[in-house]
Length: 143
Image (cartoon, rainbow, N blue to C red; front, side, top):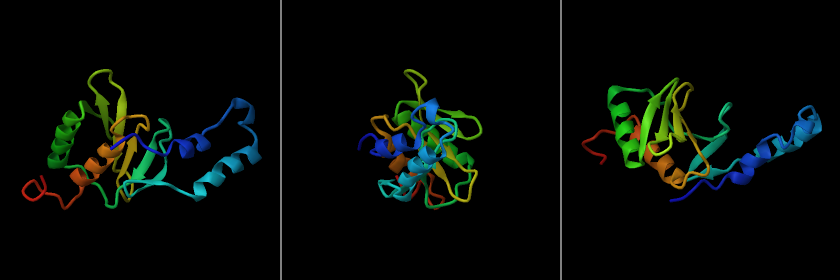
C-alpha cells in the first residue's frame, strides 16, 4: 500500500496566504471542495486535524481504550518502526526521527485515525489500525 491519495483535497482546505485570511468568498470557494469527500481503503475522510492538519478518517465503530488494545497498538507500532506516545490520545511516532505518522482518537461517537499524508505506508497503517482496534477482535480468531 502507499501514501494517501488525498493531497489535492487537503491542499484545497488550507489557507493559501495570509492575504486571503479575511476573505469570506475565498473561504467559501475552498469549502466547496468538501462536498465531494474522498475515502481511502473504504474509510471516509472526515476532515483535518485542527492543530496538525493531518487528514482524518472515520472508523466504523466506537473505540474504547483497553489494556488489550493498547498493547496491540504498541505491537503494531513496532511493526511500522514506531513507538506510541500517549497524550490526549495515542500518537504513532517513528523511532528514527520522532516524526508523527498517525494518531487514533476516541473522543467522539466513532473512532478516528489521523495520518501523515506523505508517510509511505499510510494506507497500510490505516487498514491495519482499523482491523486491530475493532471491538469484536480477539487474539484467538484474528491474527
